[in-house]
Length: 361
Image (tube, rainbow, N blue to C red; front, side):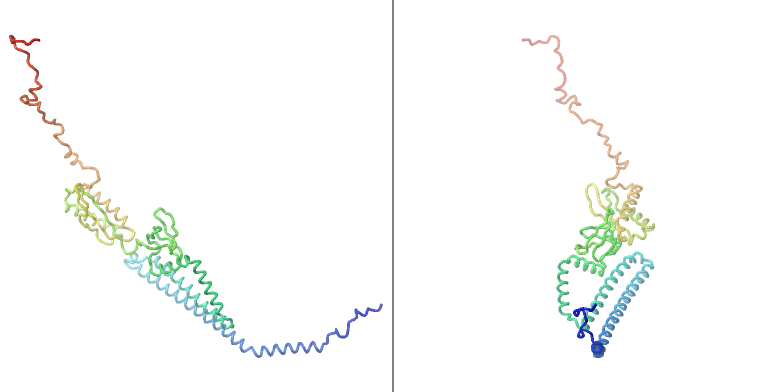
């Protein structure tokens, strides 16, 4: 059966092999020409980008290694001082290590951000991208984020300056105003404190307006001794001096005392008591323990020496002196004298004598 004419292929629709080959040849020729004309620029651009990346990576690695070596050197210095005779009293190696690690972490992060950010902008500039709108958009976004997260920025900056200035560290007992206690952890945004009752306080660094560090330098232990005004001050000074000498020779008080126990003198003189002030320079944070031990020993020494502390139990001789012998004697009375008018007034009327006239009604 013959095919319909509409289904038979036309001669015009049949592809010409010669034309297809010619078009392919022209495309390849154009591509080769384009590559030949631009390969030098592409190679230059690729080498430029590669050089920027290599220099940025090398500079970042060099800076990070330098900061790490600096931190290790600081830690070695702290360990060397700690190994000395008074190193453990003057330098807290763990606190210094944590502080140096925190500073190193911040510096490494800042250095990486600056180096990699600058390298990224240089790569974009090498690719021919206009950085003006990008920088303007980044500036606007930064301002918006800064306003929205100003508390976070404030906390971060406060934490950085707190670490750089070494205001406090792990193990210190501080009073931060909003909370007080022992520093457990120091961060760039939050400081963790453990209170006297064992509670944990999380204090934002931006909320800390003033800090009282109770663990830096040295502390003072003060004891007030209340005695009777009749006691001998020279004897009191001698007894307290013996107590102080004994305390300074015993462990661990010989390490906690950083100075001699001194009798400062009379702090207050009243009719019923007088106050003797005793003071000593101690290791930071150990002043309360030294005060309690001093009170304990002074009380025992005064009891042995017969010195009475106001507020304690009265001594035996004081009780005997307090008994008044005249308390059992009655007060003198006018009736005890028979010749006194009072005695005569109370005497009975004698009966009338015999033969005496009687008065009758």
